[in-house]
Image 1 (spheres, one colour):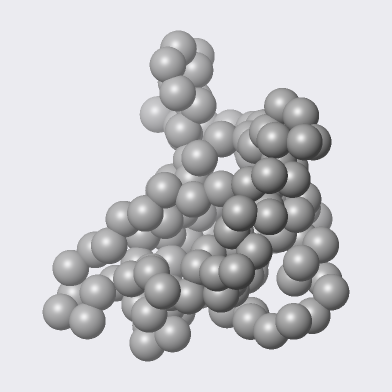
Image 2 (spheres, helix red, strand yellow):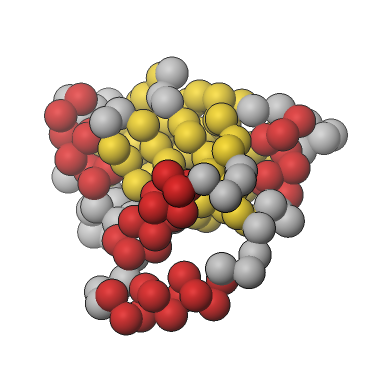
Length: 140
């Protein structure tokens, strides 16, 4: 199976793609959730709301998988396996990181600001995922 080099993986993860996060439910079944993310310095960050199943699952069991694919017609895929650190609180770095994640998925700043403002009242947590294992496929 053709794979990507570490440099190709890092470049691939820079694009604003969706990651599908896999967590473990209480009964052991997988819980899959699409999320926005940012990849910086070898770490994946994702802002989630605290009322979600993935948040509850990760507090109980921090094991996580992230699947990121290129979407048609880009046939590349990266899978990250790790444990997630879950950070909450009014810390400035969390809000700054949340804003940078939102901004990368919008073409213009005004639209990103509207989304950030509309969701500001929700309780958020930041997932910090330092990959323990990465697999890739490159069928391009």
